[in-house]
Image (tube, rainbow, N blue to C red; front, side):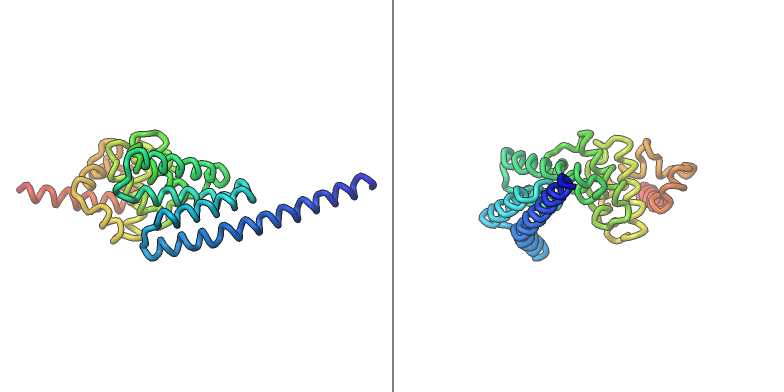
Length: 243
C-alpha cells in the first residue's frame, strides 16, 4: 500500500501535467489552424509573414504535445499550399515538398486509415513530379482504400490519376478507375468536369490492363458498370467522328 499510493499520485500528476500541456498546445494550434482554413475558404493567398507565424505557432504546439497527428497534418498543409505558387524555383519546390511529405508521413504513422492524409501525399508527390514512384501509387491506392466514398478524395484521386495514367502501376489504375466509378454515381458532374478531355477517356477506357471498354469484359461490366457504360458511349462517339 505504501508503494501504491505514491505511484498513484505520480500518475495523477503526470496526467494533469499532460492535460495542461495539451491544453496549452491547443492555444497555439487552434487559432493557426482556423486562420489557415479561413484563408483557404476565402481563396486568399497566404503571405510569407502569415506562413511563418502559422508554422511558428504549430511548431510550439507540437513541442508541447508531440505526436499530435492533427498538428503534423496542418504543418504539412502549410508547406503543401506553398507548392501551389507558380513562380517557385526548383529548390523551393523540393524544400517545401519534402517538408510537407515529412509531416504527412509522421501523421500517417499515427493515423494510417485517414484518407485525406494519403490524398495530400499523392498531391505533393504529383507536384514533385514523382508520379512514376511506388510511393505515389501507394498514396492513391490507400486514399481510395480508406476514403472510397469521400467526395473530395474521389475528385483528387480521379484528377491526379487520369493526369498521370500512363505512369501508374496496375493497382493504382484499378484504384483510380474505382474512384471514377463511384464518382459517376455520387458526383457525376464533378467527375465529368475532371474527365473533360478525350485523351483522359481514351487512356482509361482502352487501357489493356483493365479493358473497361470491351463489351465482353466481365471485370468492366461487374466492377465498373457506370464507367463501362460511359466508355461505351465514348467509343461510339469516337467511331462516329471517324465516319
